[in-house]
Image: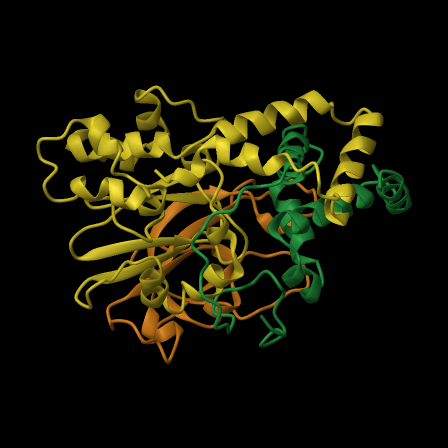
Length: 218
Length: 102
Length: 101
């Protein structure tokens, strides 16, 4: 899990008493105000969704991966019927959430997720996507030079490992189960979940090594 | 970023030539960006718009605008275009309100 | 009819149609004209080319995951020869491919 997902960071940025609102901010506010006056939406409805979205973290995804690492039968259920398996852990998936498909890394294959056409992402499980996932650079390059892009995330994939890129162009959203790090045999699910980063579930990095967790979080 | 390498639309980025590195850092969203994200979700839940309509509106932005805009600037522009198309807003009233709020 | 018949099955070789309509569609240019292998049939989904214009998206279109060799997609691909890429594509964007790459 990335430190960038902690809500306090957002709160700091949102309060900007000395800054003039940008033209984009004014126009967005105008659209919302007009829709409110016309009775199309209520301001509180929008606020509630903002709060719910800002409370979302990749924690659900990390918990699901940790259970899949710990319980092979659960992993098979997760791959076969993802939403039912996620619900087993007590996480609610909104009924309007797009269908999920779970892919598993192996010593022979690494999977990397992108949406070249827009920003399709398993929000129900990971929360809002990171900026880089939506960036033109990532969307342009990861399909044509995935290994170079992975190196920019500090991930070096040996040539004998197949890199498989998944371009989410349609109705499915993808979640990667990263490889379970070595040296984690004795760890419980909570400790394991702490090693599962958002980026590892998109496929651009590995799960954290147990002793490396502190280093990566800083 | 540069002109399209062919006649493709601005959103069709796969393999689009660029030397730009991936900036792997996250940036906090501004308040209006969170609200635009939420507004799109609320309007979708009400059936006023849909994901597919939003995609169509985003990819209809001119290339220069698409590339110069931030992610939620694209969303906001696309949302406005859809709402005007549906007759729920008039472009002139959005202009006037945005000026008036300044 | 609310669902078109799936014309392909996993293992079939398919070619992606080359077409760039002015209207909305979800088949990236880089895959157009390329040959791949059907890896999975997900089921049938409402057609985004219809949904984008506030229509009902029916009949539903079969949706496949198609796998491509990276060295086939990009002649100058610099990664390993066994690297692959997969895209989710609707039935009407695919045609049978008899030959090799």
